[in-house]
Length: 73
Image 1: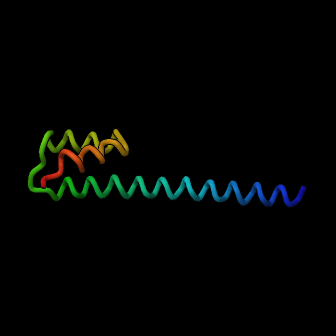
Image 2: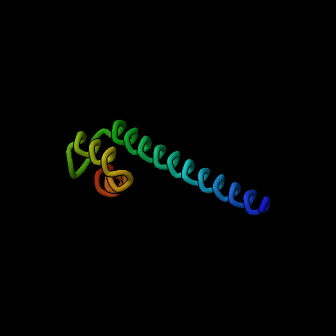
């Protein structure tokens, strides 16, 4: 029974680390998109404030849409 608890604890620890890593990666992606949006001299498709709202509220789809359609080429 003791080995079972150790394995369960390790599995839970690994799952928690994966969730934390995913949260950090999503946070970094959103901050990258917002920084890129703020530094861009011109954006395409939608107004800058609309892109900002999409990036923040449609995580991560908004950032992907901005990088594909709103980022100047």
